[in-house]
Image (cartoon, rainbow, N blue to C red; front, top):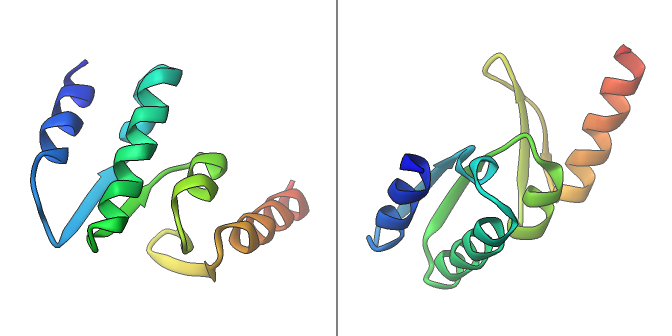
Length: 95
């Protein structure tokens, strides 16, 4: 509940950079849809949004670029679908 409240309060601000760290994983489906719409509104408002998530579907739905990082190193960056594919191939090969 605190994460949802904090996210809602943060949406009322007008920052140049908006950092979202895994907050979308704490809500129900309704909260997720409302949050995604709010994030897209931030994009339209010319705000830089940095979304940290392990959910490839959320990243694909709201992000225009993705970065896969591990231990502080960038392993891939580009379109979300491309980065997801590289990630999936790498994790399958490593299994």
